Amino acid sequence: MSKALVVGMGIGQLYKTVLTNLGYEVITVDPDISKGAMLPSVDAAILVHAPFDVVNICTPNFTHVKIARQVASFSKIVFIEKPGLATSDAWEQLVKDYPYTRFMMIKNNQYREEIKRFKELADSSNSVTVRWNNKNRIPHPGSWFTTKSLSFGGVSRDLIPHMLSYYCALTDYEQGNQLFSSVDQRHNLKDLTITDYGVVNHNGTYDVDDFCELQYTSSNGVKWTLTANWKDDVSDDSSISFDMTNTAIKFELGLCPEEAYQHMIKTAIDNIDNGEFWLKQYKQDTWIHKQIEHL
Figure 1 (cartoon, rainbow, N blue to C red):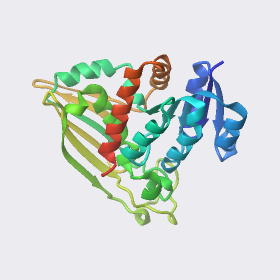
Figure 2 (figure 1 turned 180 degrees about the vertical axis):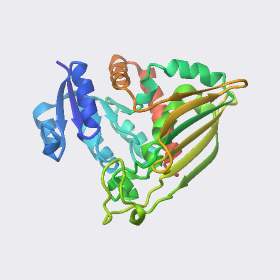
Figure 3 (figure 1 turned 90 degrees about the vertical axis):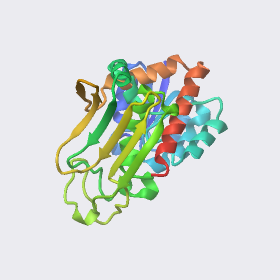
Figure 4 (figure 1 turned 45 degrees about the vertical axis):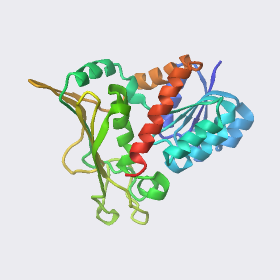
């Protein structure tokens, strides 16, 4: 039976389910065993269960690089949750240092079943807008999520990578041009009382962007606008809109379905020896890092 390691039992719970449904023996790690993990450390998992066919790193952003390097020599494929690592240089060095291991930043939205339809619409549009606006969903204010030294940024590292993933999938992204970028911190910890995601820790830190907007022109002249915020006090809107000459079409995106995660992992496994596939992943992952590392 193929073996998978999942590190971090937040979103890692989803990967455990997906990998189990794909027929993997799944080993889970989290320092907080109360979250349902089998083991408290990566070292223990390596000692008892290595090697692994697949590893999913689903831990706080600042821990990604250390864990990736811990598991690399014992793994065929290492999936790293967005936003990957702190910089594009760090990503490039990781891939260079472990040439016999495949690395991929999670880009689950590229594997939605409707992605081909989106591509057709994008090619015939004048403009495309991707939104991820939240009424009140700042993640655990005062925790590592809102501490720049640990998360590397706010929505620019949390939500924007998903939107850039769409842009990569639906355009010749390397040939496009960035028109505009804006990041802003619109809220302060002292003013927050409640959030739909976690609890507020007023003794913590809040020094990250909570609004971000990027604009690009793709190689075929389509204007793309990517907008994300954690809290606008208005409404929740996760969507993609295609504006054409005589009509406009909007799709509500919502949370990515489990089938897309399963398709992503299966596609990577099926292409384990396909160098062209992994070069494509490397180029996209490096490009996404470069878009967000200086915001």
